[in-house]
Length: 94
Image (cartoon, rainbow, N blue to C red):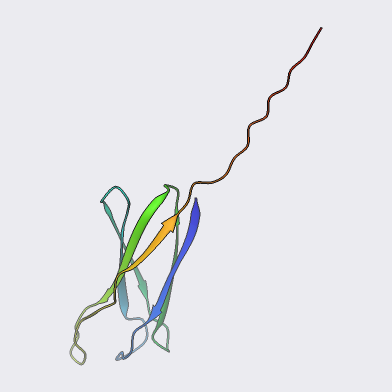
């Protein structure tokens, strides 16, 4: 299990609060589309928890508006590893 923080910036915006869609491709091939909004500097952040180990990828997009063209980030891959665990064994003799 891992808490994954996805963040970035939009280079230009008419006003803060622009919607950014982040699509995460999971190891099984399904997609998780999430939305977040920009702050006054164009920055955005989203944190999600993923529990399945494997390689994921994510891409962020913003739609066109009256002033700016749509834009898409490069795809970024990340890997979630298995969580370590231990096993104990007790032996009793009588």
